[in-house]
Image (cartoon, rainbow, N blue to C red):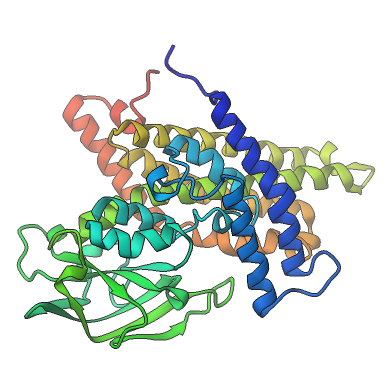
Amino acid sequence: MAIDFTLSPELEDTRIRVRSFIDDVVKPATDRIEGRDGGEPLTGGDRVSVLVDLRRQARDAGLWLPHMPAEWGGMGLGHVALAMVQAEAAKSYYGPWVLNCQAPDEGNMHTLLHWATPEQAEKYLRPLCEGKVWSCFAMTEPEVAGSDPTLIQTRAYPDGDEWVINGHKWFISNAHRADFAILVCRTEDDPDIPQAANSAFIIDLPQQGWTEVRQIETMHGSTGHSEILIEDLRVHNDQMLGGRGQGHLLGQYRLGPARLAHCMRWIAQAETALDMMVDRSLNRFSHGSLLAEKQGIQWMIADSAMELYQAKLMVLHAAHKIDRGDDFKSEVSMAKHFVANMVNRVIDRSIQVHGALGYSTDTPLAHMYQHARWARFADGADEVHQMRIAQRTIAAYTDEGTTRRATGNLPI
């Protein structure tokens, strides 16, 4: 029987070690950073010192860089194994960063590993894996729909051994602190297909011609989602990442596994919210009984448990397909859509069960909810994923007379 949802003893040990590290090391340090241990919140050098020390401890514990091969200093885990690591790490706000598997750097590491020349990998991937630098991925623009990269207007034209780039980007996560960017822009005026119009370049930062206009204020504050103005930025030929006209392909290669990694972290947030919901229901008495004994509350708990179960199965199956080298686009797209909506619903229910307490900042739920709303359009809006899922379902029936291929092609 090939279907087995158990982990090997080695991976089970890894999961327990990650869980213990997050519970025993990262969470107490987070309480200290945020001032939840009775002291004042840490700022400046004190805050940085604690965070850097957490990364040192992660390295010492053998929990560094779970998604990268051993030759790059990582744990060499596949996507199924990575799912359980990310789901444990993201139980803490700083967890993924402490293990150096946070967005957008994680996706950029995968991209550089696959597309970079040996020289580019040594210059950019090596320090990224060592935790010495930050990076960003600059694709989204304010003038065109971010869900359709064929519409990108940032343009690059050749000038001798260099390219000159002009354009406008925004919501570029991590750009405020990045040491380099992977920039996607249009280089081809008349491509054979629209998807062959773009190329990608590695941009050292700071650099003349790259101006951070602002950090855009979002629902969860100004935290590094920047607007960038690009004016006559010059970059050498050897800074092109991948081949000319390969920018769209590179972006899609990056976004597939990155979408699933987001889902893994969102599962952690949903599970935390469900745990808090149940705990609250067992400790809050109202109108003659505990909340846990009231049918309306039980329905919210049941719906959340069922949806979390669905999410875990979808992520595990999509990760399994990636590990096998199968076509995973449809499964990742469905997982991304479902999990993004699931985490919003579960956190919302948990806030409801907590009442005014859940709406306040005395619990992490309000902060979690602000971040969760972003999930429904990051790395592809709900509606775009639904469109693609429908197209693949129709194509499966047209080609084969059944929709089985579009629903996971499972043996049931």
